Image (tube, rainbow over all chains, first blue to last red; front, side):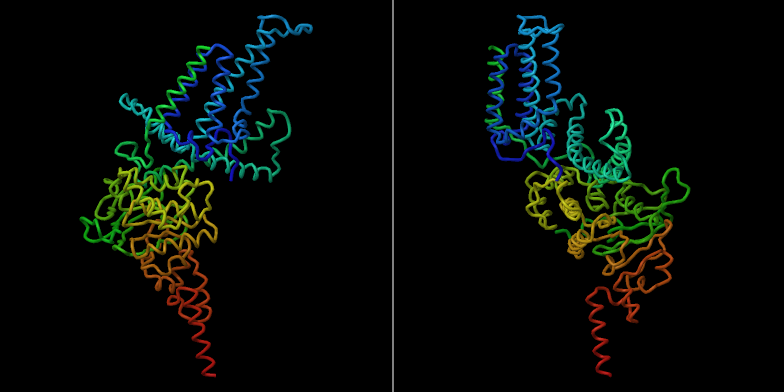
Length: 262
Length: 286
């Protein structure tokens, strides 16, 4: 089986997994908006503590969860570096030729880094505790009021479901093509970044062509199975917004409120 | 369980009828199908063979309205797929070649439910029908598996379950084993075999041995229906086979080499019996 990549659903039984996807999506939205309203490091730290607790409750191993953050570490490092180098606030801690590290830059860097990490973690917690189908169903449901203004809520959700379904398929195919090209002497690991990017062209072209062929066949299969858009359709999975879902949402809002006030 | 012939309307008791159907793809000079006529009676198991580009896939797509004939008329359970495609698709399901590209949902049970969702079947009924369909293809316990983790044969069985859940009377199999390895092929054929008595089946394939037990075999070549015969008569018509680049299955080839009637011996077991009978009578005579 293909390796579990970042943010992928981690299927274990936990109270967090069990929540209604709509509650989780809304809570994540509240969380993200809240993060941008919080202006103190203490506030962020208190929210971070709550998130750590939530991850523990979700039964996702800490190591697996931390892997989520790896792709953003570069951005985080860059953010901190810029703040440290260019901030002119606070007292000077280190001075070295042109460079000086000031306390203001350091604390602002830390604050921004924490915000980015929390942002990614909250989104990651959502996708790793919610099955893709449930996520799509939840989004469809939340967007369905927009159907009245002709927003294609069902279609958007269906596109998501299909994208999620075919990510592993295309990944596998990319590996296969890479193998085939490597067998003909293509080299994907040598040279500078530009050369390496160019060496991927012979992989991307057949992959794209293949994706179009798949799309055609999928459309035929879907039509043959009576698909005709969202109208008159029923859903196999039932979403039930229970008391605990409301509770989870309220608790999230409260935690964020505390963070903002601190 | 549906019975053959149920839900028929005009057109009498025919499951499928094609009358002088022709079709050309846009921009192509040669017709993909020309003047094809045949009928399927309820409960029949009919094979379709012929070289690539012979018109097999086109025929399949005309049956459920994915394509519309340029001329002629297709009727499925008395309905015209070019005017009532959605109605026809309730009665006729197609199992395509590559199951990988036919599975829509990220989990097995969700995919099996897809056709029922499209029909607007109530949730409780959907649960029962999905469970029954999954049982019918022997995939109990696979409900929460992701398609990516399944073998080719298993994927094709999931696709089959998705069709069976809708409970169509007619099943069209469009080379359903051509993308599978030997064991996947065997496993899919085994489940298709169980449908023989229950459904009207049109089975498109490159492998004649999959059709030795069918009621009739249609041969399509160059867009024309060149034969509509029982397996016995097709298998013993060496000229017809050669003209359409059809290879006699191993059992029949062996029978022919041994001077036994190839068309009468369909399975390896039957051939073995015949060989045994002959050697026994031979020893007795000698």
